[in-house]
Image 1 (spheres, helix red, strand yellow):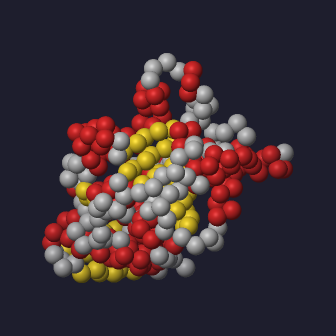
Image 2 (image 1 turned 180 degrees about the vertical axis):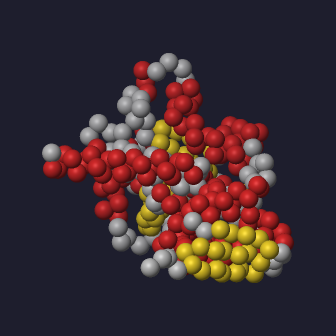
Image 3 (image 1 turned 90 degrees about the vertical axis):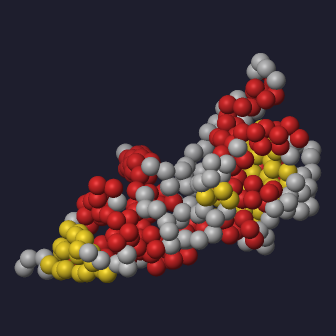
Length: 329
């Protein structure tokens, strides 16, 4: 018995939507054809999908979901197409409706920042509603960037009067004293990603002005000791590299009218003793406390280049196989 062949037609409202769906040199449609092994043709306002039964059904779901996005004025990119493909696989593609819409803030260059995946949306909502939020997941899921965007939004709305960004200085082993130069020179290299996000959102001049006034502070975690942070939006980045004592010290700095966002990737612990990650402990300790929310991201939320996703997956598979070998070896 051969595979039963099917043909489905999706009707599209405007020719612009068809063009958006097909993409430059048909690159979007080629991606879908390759993924589902179907042929996709545009005929006026109709899109015709031909191929094996189940593949056609899935391709149709993906196309309809992508049309929902273009209908809401979203541009299609390799990233959101591969995200839609993974959602169709999970059967969660109907949730995409929730995504288009709210922007968090506009960058200095006029780019709109908004959640691009369902988990990113959950994260942004959790930050709005809770005093402490932990964003856990792989690199490239927007954990830090979105947290900074939310901080900038709160700052611009005068909900807080200070933004504090901090990271544990694992690379320097927290012994920053031995490095030459002043405080700024010492911490810059590993705080760079945080500066970049703020730069993006404020623009260089405004950013500099706020830094000088002290309304934006970027500092290593060690500098938080002994302070109480009121009226501030505080982000602890790369928290997987904090010890249990450090993260507890940090969380108890919380002052009135402040928010804390903790981000980290528990697969990337650089501490000499991986079992001593304060983030893993904090996730267990704080589970179920009101006004604290833990949001988890997966490789599906990686909104960087499609290859970044492939690389993360390949490493996960490699490490899994390594574990099996040591168990059976």
